[in-house]
Image (tube, rainbow, N blue to C red; front, side):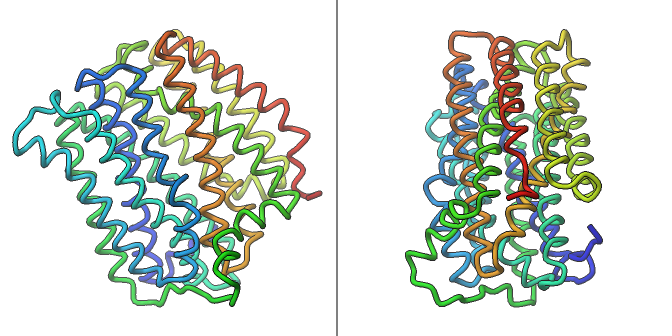
Length: 401
């Protein structure tokens, strides 16, 4: 990646806005489960907080992709970021007006999380298409790599920031920071002067809505890549859905210690995402993906077997590094196969597939943690990740797709 989006003021504003939006969204992945536990919710409900945050992708994803390829993308992203900010501010505003955080209704916590994610669906879909306008066809792959890296960075920094803020000011006050991040994203997106599209391809509306799914179905490499990434997301997201519960109940970590663990994992994940383009160039997409998926399986085993916080932190860092490398390459391979006029639909289709699998993983995690310890659930997830890696190795042959 050569920093093509950093060469223009609009590109820089776009990247920072995407960083703020993803970072604020990542913060809620830690804060909302913590609030569920503080409000007296069970470990299963805390895992469900992760799950409910993904539902809007599954319900709205195809339509968000269609809108992102048919309507002006800049207003879509601005209004969606504003919606996210309102949803994030709802909980601390309610607490400021009356009930204590421990008395918040579980339904309100879940609705706020879903509101944040609903806005994110439309930001994501429009952003996939906006990159083509910002960098042009000659630098399209570099632009998508930069966007993927910024998203990864935000979703790594966000949980670490959330853990730190929980220790410093509490979970409720941390949501004011989240809302401020969304507000800044909206301002930056509104300040972009370049027309961000969309392009028009003249196809009927039904084809527009379904074209992302149709492209995956037609392309053999995409079918394999989607199947593998869905299986991987299902098993790995059992770890992510319960990482807060695991840190708090199994490792006996408070807010600052959990924040440190997540911060180290975030830094490792950033490194993994940053080296993904180099790994792809040196090893090819097939070799890089195979190494990353095997590495994530090994890290999952190490996390499940970790005897203490230090070992768990190292294993979690390995999981984040290999996982972000894997995801960055997956996104790049998918988007390079899509035409500029299909970027929003194909991009959000891939995101939907990943989150559908993640949701299943979260359901499994929430169900199992109701009668097993978080450590035992992690052992099951580790075994599943090893099986996925073993089955996937012969399927990851992208050069032949």
